[in-house]
Length: 206
Image (tube, rainbow, N blue to C red; front, side, top):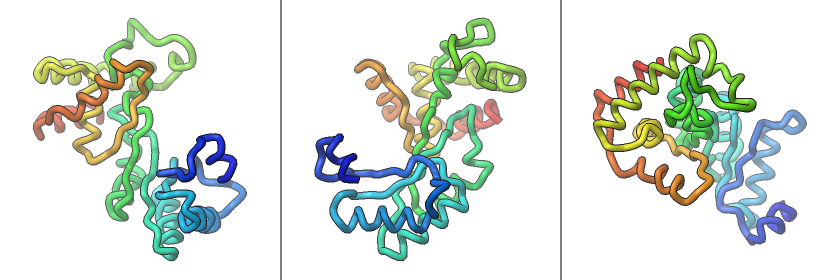
């Protein structure tokens, strides 16, 4: 912890997230160490990442015994990766009052409209299941719906995909390499999708 604070040049970390469950230390032990850091004034909030529903409950219980809430669970979640809805993670977060943070909310660019069956990405992304078989069929279907809704709202496909997460009470963390990209992402907060439009996205991505 001291080394992390030194590298960050900060006296305290606002949110410290455990990136993956540890193989070498129990969740309860790890959460007690995080609670120690909170009580020492080095960390303001404790979160986790890639924790299952059962692991979430264990972490939440361990922190609760120290009077500290579990702030977040950061997992992969997007219109093309809806496993948190099926594996209990989303429901558990809602039950326990834990914020679900979605990484890869645009599916590594697949939901921007930039890539299609005829224009696949280069590098490692080319081999993703998104661009093969049933994944490709779903991508085409979702992007068609995103295109239609983007035109209706005068927004980008990315903004529609991010807004879908926002209205599911999920905190999305899309990547941005430039100021304009960050501003484009932020504009997902400037409009609202109708319930019928949310349903259309749910159906397209099912």
